[in-house]
Image (cartoon, rainbow, N blue to C red; front, side, top):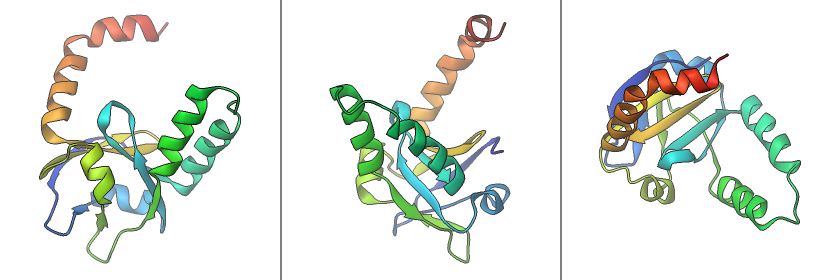
Length: 140
């Protein structure tokens, strides 16, 4: 399980440090792809396989299903941590998520999210301001 949030910087070679608490849980190979709300998502191989099963179950007859699968699968690539715990972010994903330098790495239970710091702060402030209302509508 991935929990917590960590601030880091993107270096000049488009690398980020994955928090040590997350590295062992990621395993040797992981998948990084475009995520929701303009973040990037890193999945373990197992979580990616689970997501693939759901994506394969979608109907090819619906344009919105095809579009969703193409964005996720088309922007996905394998990644692994180097000896210093860094992962290279592909340039297309950096651009898509509007990452400049400062990032926030967020644990989201079965996957990791990478956010541009400003985008995360705005998202988090909004979600926190509406937290009670969100919980009331979700948890019964």
